[in-house]
Structures are given as C-alpha cells and as structure tokens.
Length: 425
Image (cartoon, rainbow, N blue to C red; front, top):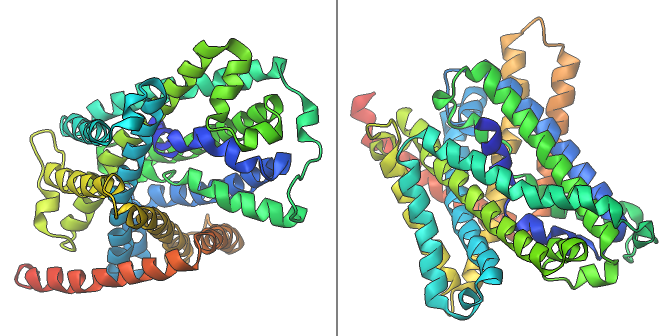
C-alpha cells in the first residue's frame, strides 16, 4: 500500500500526454527523463535514510526540516507543502474530468457537468479517506494496477511495432544536445513530485523503519521504468511529426496495436491514473497538517481525529480549498489565475526537497554517526540539494517570485498560532 501511494501520487493523467510534449526534441528527450530520474532517485535515497532516523515522526519533509533547522523553517516548509497539496488536488481533479471527456464527450462541452464530476470525485474520495488509511490504501493499490496496465501493454507490445528510424535524428530541435537534455529534464522532473508520499503518514504504517524506505525506493524505481520505457515505446511507434501534434500519444500508440478499442482503454487508464493520484493526495492533505498541529504550529482543528484515527477536519478543509481552486478553472475571468496557481503550487512543492536535502547533511553531521562517512553524507546531500535547486530554477522566475511571497504570507499565520498557543507551552 505504501509503494502504491508513492507510484499513485506520481503517475497522474498528465503523464499520458508527456510524449507529445517531448516530441519537439526527439529521442534525446529520453536522456532528459534519465537525468531527472537520477536526481529523483538520489532524493528518494535521502528521504529513505531520513525516514529511518525519524521512525516516531510523521510529516515527512516538515519533520526532517524541523529536526535540521528548527521549528520556524519546518513551519515554512509545511505551509508551502500544504498549499501545493490542495492546489495539486484541484489540478488532478481537472485532469480526471479531461481524461473522462474522451470517453464521455459531454464533459468537454458542458461546464456544469464537468464541475459536478470533478467535485464529486474530490468529495467521494474525501469520504473514502475518512474511513481509514487502509481503505484509502486499498483504493490506491487497485487504481495503481489499473493505471499501469495500458502503459505496460504499450511497453511490451510496442516491441513488435518499434521503428528505430523514428529516433533519427536523435535531436530534432534547434538546441544543442546539452540544452535539449537540460530542457527536457526540467520538463520531466515535475512528473516525479510525490515520491516522498510514504514518509508523511508514517505513524499509520506498520514497521515504518523497513516499510517506508523500501516503498520510497521501489515506488521511485518502478515509476522511473514506466516513464522512460513508456515514452521510448510511444516514440518508437508514432513518428515524431505526428507525435508532436497528437492530443493523446499513448492512445495513438495503442491504436496502432489494437485499433479503436485500445484508444478507449488508454483513455480509461488516464482517468484511473488521475483518480488514483487524487485519492493519494487527499490522504496527504489531511496527514501533513496533522503532524504540524501536534507540534502546535497549526490550529488544533487539524489534529482532531475521528474514530478511525483520521484527521477528518484537516482533510475536509483541504478538499474545500481544492474545490474552490478547481471552480476557478471553469469560471470566466479566473482561468489565468488558475494557470498561475499551477505554476505556483509546483514551485512551492520543490522547496521541501531543498530543505530536506540540507537537513540530511546537518542532522547526520550533528549526530556524528560512525557508520555514516562524511564524504558520503556530503556527496549525497549535495547531489540532492543541487537537483532541488535545479528544479526550482526550472519553475521560472515568475513562479519563484510569487512562491516566495506566498511563503512569506505564512509568517503572520505562524506568529498568530504561536501567540494563540503561548499559554499552553
């Protein structure tokens, strides 16, 4: 279940469109995938090691940053991560509706039905998540298997339809090979957001010392193989010129193999991918603020649990905010604001990786563990930090600027909560 949470939160409906976005660069974009996956794998190693050091702490990036740099830095990371989570839920809900519209065209023509479908998905999964972590986990396992099925069919079946000529020339863009790899690695790295998911609800995981590191590494490896092999298979089947303008590249590849029936299967897979990712992030939007509230850095309502041990109020608040953001996409005059929030949420989501990588070095050097050579600590920590910084750079200057403003808005909130809890400390 922990592994499926990692895979499910990374693999969303957007991945089904990635080959078309990369086609402008040609086969060299596979190198971009490999570069971003290498950076993510280093981060996953850092998170798996941190999870072993903090078995009794839930909250993932928040807990690690707090341990390394104190409660204020921990709060800022948690504040930003929380915002990015409910923005992400809204984006995924829209992706779910978009994927379904291929099967049910009315969703693409009727905004009211589209809104109701997206809201229904959010609140159905919110209700399921309030039933317990295991209930959410079961949904995640099933949706992960279903979403990977059409991609694996293309990877395996694509071998029989593969045309190596589609990769010649290897770089079809006007950029140098280095620039093309750099650009495509920036484009693809956002597909890996969510690899840290297993570390957040750690107090609900059996034997977290073994389960969470294994789930984080295994989930990241499986996702990497699916991304790279899936993209390579589609590029090998569909000519680059056709792929570049394709509205559904995986569906086109499946169409070559099986005809129209396959196209419907891929559309269903994309919808299930979004549904599964939505389920996983709704779990996270309740678990993250619960950990912060327990440390009295968020209002107490976020740590209140139902009989199943689920922070139900935090989950409801997160889903309500996500619903408002989703509605903006279907409201004339607010579409640009919605697009801005997507960039903002993506940028803020990278900040916790930056702090966690630095915390890893700080914590281990402070603990002076004899089994941890300083060169290895600095080496892995520096690679993870550099990759996170590169991801932040790739978000663009506008996103970084407004993301910084959004983080600073959290400071008055922090002061208020500290003042509110001053008599309880």
